[in-house]
Length: 226
Image (cartoon, rainbow, N blue to C red; front, side):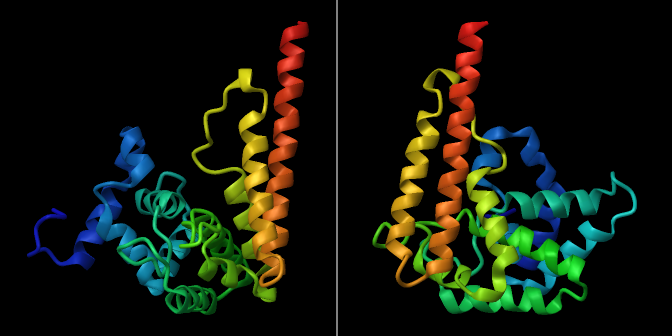
């Protein structure tokens, strides 16, 4: 269907929304989001539809409601960033416009909180910038806005504890987490002058990973001493 240029992309996105739960059945597809290009594009270019799906997630009365479940799953696993071009770079104005529109459309504090949570976790999948800095500058600039504290908090959670969780090697006893923490510290230093709130968020991610590393060391010691 993606290869068929005669199919309306908006209609195809809605069809893919109905099929997106199949990603759970295909682990490799879940990693890449392959086969759902129209869904990911619409989800990150149409803020009105994004909010429509958030409303469905918020107001579902039946836990097994298929549309609400699919909407929640799609937003949680979206591999694309608002404002992302086909070459992977991010248009900062488009990103800002998308986020501002979503937050403007959220009619209640509760829905705005859900929007900040989902957007923050999506932005935690930001690509690096051309200079190798993470997150790329358009995302770092957006995250630094003082009124987006809730979004930054979700960004921290999404980066420190990604979904699905990474498979860890107990034998390494937190080595991977310490390496990741060091990388976040370097990013924090990179952005500390221009975007201090973003830098603080990156330091919080680093500290969360160091705490996780310590827990791995404690768990390995406990097992070895048992």
